[in-house]
Image 1 (cartoon, rainbow, N blue to C red):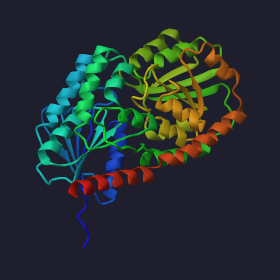
Image 2 (image 1 turned 30 degrees about the vertical axis):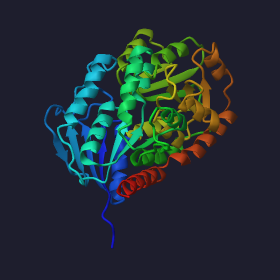
Image 3 (image 1 turned 120 degrees about the vertical axis):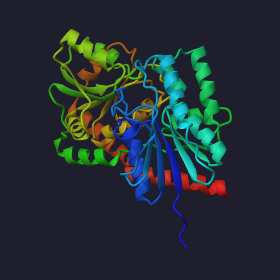
Image 4 (image 1 turned 120 degrees about the horizontal axis):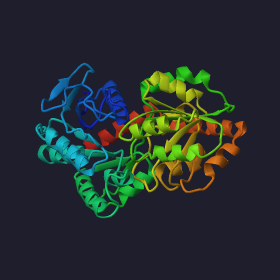
Length: 410
């Protein structure tokens, strides 16, 4: 006799059509549904990374979508007008928690709850739902919220961060199964008092639609440098990225390069204004592209730029790294050497990592470039990308959910 399919409640803040985590979380739900699991999603109305009500439906009403083969239940939340304001971010977190709290699952409705953090409000709701419905929770930490808030300049690095960390850690302890997406982040979670004895490494992956476009664009990739050198940045532009500081450093060099920025986010307007003011022809700025054009831009770039504000520590690892590897585009990273991105760069030779304070480092980078080194980095990227495939990623998630559900029933 076949056992019934696992019934999983998934709690996230962003979901398709939102970018960033929204694309990945939707791809996971599609994959779990394809494998026969019974999925129910609770999420917000679309708002990210533009921080605006993209559907025009954000509010008190709870809506249900079923066209994907599973239920997507959308809840309203407060969307900050200034995402860099600590007060507005706290209201944002709290509003999502209270909005979700209007519907608590009954006992035996689900076999497991999977909640994705960076929103503490989502994790807090999962803890309450777990307690009232006696359902085990898997906490998947994509972003250590308190530490990331400090890194992005939203919260101060002393008292404010300490209070946020205590709240964060108390919420985390309501979950019985913890995982994160990089080894340094796993190690950080293990240091939290009351953490489970095992914190699991379950990395993200390249979602299916972007993988298809990257494969189609692969014939555009060359293993010799362009002249001028082509740099690409694509993704969120917020406090954690510190992209404007990198642009200012680049401008001070006399290097020959073409830097294309495709972005959106809380600090994107600052970058756009800076570009208009300086009128440096080496820079060009655009909004975020669709996946097909992102794949083409990656294939045509010599380097994919990833910047992290100094002091980011182990709070997050940029998801934009994965499509860069899949497209065999080496990374030019400005980041801490001991953070998740810095360690990944060092261990697997994915490109060039620079320190923010290393005087002359950017000029030296351009001076020392050669096509032989570029080809070597491209090969390393291709090799490392095999760790981030969709099939492996979803298989890991199915195994984790099965383990959690089985343990709770034993």
